[in-house]
Length: 68
Image 1: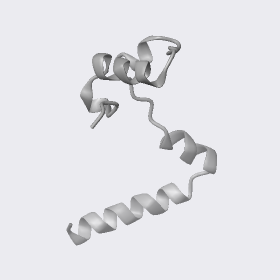
Image 2 (image 1 turned 45 degrees about the vertical axis):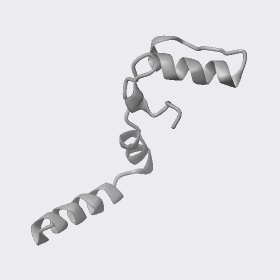
Image 3 (image 1 turned 90 degrees about the horizontal axis):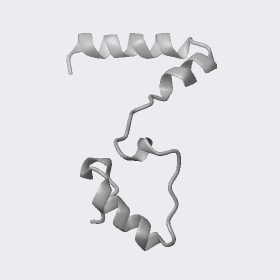
């Protein structure tokens, strides 16, 4: 990291710290579409095993719901 990069980051942080709390909170949460997860209003499962099986079969692995 260069000194100019460090200086820019510090300036951006200081500017953000001066914003009202509501503005900072509005900027802090980013809605990201999650395939399959966001495609239904809700889902319910009879057992945790059913839920885990559904996650492994239906969700993209990069979402992080796969068993290790």
